[in-house]
View 1 (tube, rainbow, N blue to C red):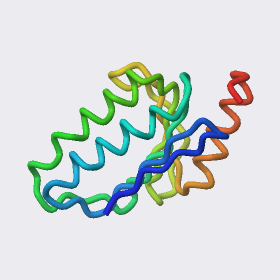
View 2: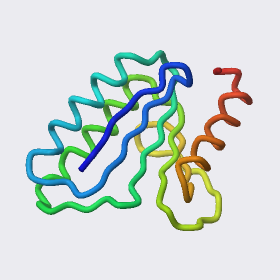
View 3: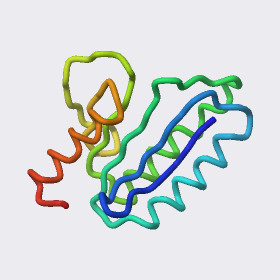
View 4: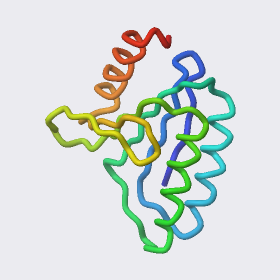
Amino acid sequence: MYEVRVDVEKNRIYVVLGEINTGDGEKMIQLVKDGVAKLRSPFTCVSDISDFSLLDPGEGKWADTGLKILARAGMARAVRVTRHKVKYSEKKEKYGYIVSPAPTVDAADDILDAYEADQNLS
């Protein structure tokens, strides 16, 4: 199970990863490509990985491809939803964007809304 949706008004892409079956990775990557085509750079991303699991370990290869697509399309900031209470922290990922954790999608939206207001992106 996976879902990719775009909020054009917020200029944000949402990627929800659940149980990934064989062949799902490539389908999801296409949805990410289609989604970022609707956004303007720089945009933000919420990735909900709280229920993420791979049934086929070979499916994991698409994850790095997805991150490259998002970064190259202009993703400036991302928040990963883990459903766990986490100490807020930020780190720069290998493709240049900043990522931080959040326990819920609402908390992730709050973090990104504050970032966009601070950067005058909205």
